[in-house]
Image (cartoon, rainbow, N blue to C red; front, top):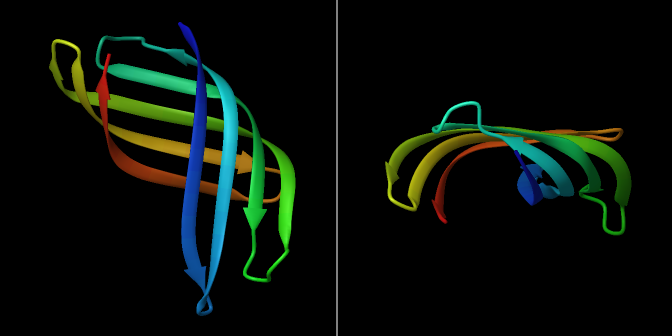
Length: 101
């Protein structure tokens, strides 16, 4: 079990303009097996809509699941899903992570 800091940034387009979201969190991370990690905790979220100056600060939470596909010594290549849910938005991402401990 560990306490970790996490930052998530997502960017997209809507109606020819942009939207993005940022979240900062302190979360508990747990490894039920050596290849599987679970993370959850509270977050501060900033959402930016296409209109300039239209940023919102909101309370939220984060969650993540990652699976280590390759483990070699201190090197790990994993597949992961990170999700953020706040009082004003929800966003997530699916990706590949590289960790060296």
